[in-house]
Length: 145
Image (cartoon, rainbow, N blue to C red; front, side, top):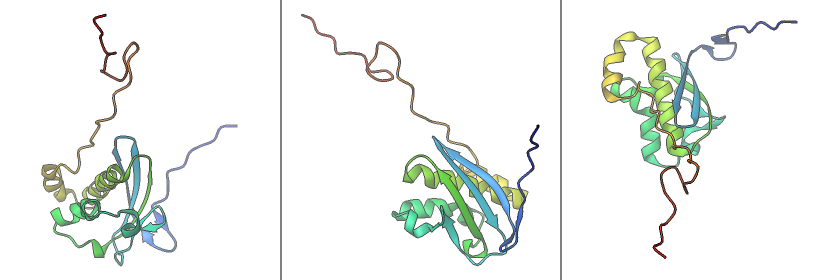
């Protein structure tokens, strides 16, 4: 029996139509749903964003695409499922997903978000350990005698 994968629906009964995008950084994957006719709710892993992001820097980082596009984040409902990484990387992955959603909604926002660097996926990850070395590049200590 062959299973046929169906495209995920872009409409839910309780909230309406949404725009979907995936944001990534290091080992973090953030699946972001942006509801254009919203009340300003920001939910991350079924918790409010202010509970998830304890530092103001991370909270500002997440809402930065709205400021660049001169939009109010209160006009949107944002629902995010994020997996992996640490708090700062999660914030940047969510920022990446939100920026992609805003471009999907209106293509004229692309130049501003591109200039701010929000559409570029930060692919820097930890380098793997090599054989014969202590870490990726750290060699064993050399002793003369």
